[in-house]
Amino acid sequence: MQLAIPYMHFRGGSSKGLFFLKKDLPEDENLRNQYLIAAIEGTTQGDSRQIDGLGGGSSLSSKIAIVSPSSVPEADLDYFFVQVQIGKGKVSTLQTCGNMLAGVLPFAIESGIFKANSPTTSARINMVNTGGICEVIVQTPDYQVQYNGNTKIDGVVGTSAPIICNYLETVGATCGALLPTGNNIDIIHGIEATCIDNGMPVVIMRASDFGLSGYESIAELEANEPLKQTIEAIRLVAGEKMQLGDVSQQTIPKMCLIAPPIQGGVLHTRMFIPHVVHEAIGVLAAVSVATACILPKSITQHTAHYAENSSFFSVEHPSGEFTVNLEYSTENQEVDIKSSGVIRTARLISKGEVYISI
View 1 (cartoon, rainbow, N blue to C red):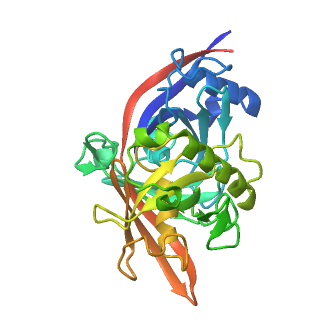
View 2 (view 1 turned 90 degrees about the horizontal axis):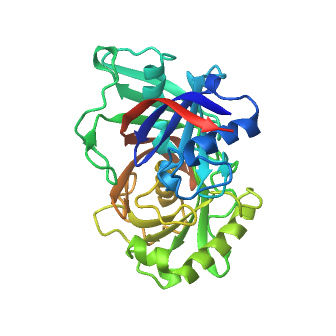
View 3 (view 1 turned 90 degrees about the vertical axis):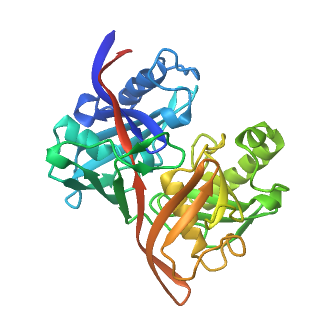
């Protein structure tokens, strides 16, 4: 049986994926996931090439956002994120995606479920997967979403109109605490690591502890199978320690190698997400990494370079940098994160109906 489902295809930040209205998908979770896998991969058996679907053969282009008017009084919209796992015929819903979030309000306006104002429109978005709230502001002159602009995001081709995302209540969103292991530093398989969750569970480690500079190319790291095996072994233990259970079939926590900055930022990163190396860094992963810089005695100590009491943190990555604005206070070495702000961009690529066979 072939079905047609309305969709829009957005590029959000350095990711892209399909956006659906919740009302257009089955309520049954298993059937819904079959629909989504079929839309992205073209088969529920798993096709890493995704020739028969709308995915791009990469985790960065195999993402889905399900949007609806919010079910909670403190938000305007609900955003549920689904990551199709490449070639596995499975999805993951344990995390959220900050890049795709940038497209949620434009999609809601384009879909007619949220009314635009002029010259800007703001909405509070409930990130259903983790429960966090994000205030998003988009440019809407004459009550129309503006996609063209001069804002440049490293890792994204061209320029676009800015989308401001102020994350609220993201501390411990997935793991239940900013430091879910209870420690500033854990030692896992002989490697020191900070396990942190300010919107995205991340395990941060020094590249030098693996005999690396931290500035290796993506291709070099991808080809280093012993390194990837070691990092995965650490990830499996870290997942248990971070209250995530058995993460062998999950896409969290993400794994981050850090080194001193070389482009004027606070530190340099290589992010494993978790089994391939990110060409840049994810939005909420950058927020978690930046947050680690202000924690006393975290793994970033002696590696991160930043001015005391600074609120802007430029996180370097293979494609450039990602700036995070942290509003926080520190008292008796306890850090209170009030909000985490980033600037993203988005573009509507296409809209129509995706045909799936179930």
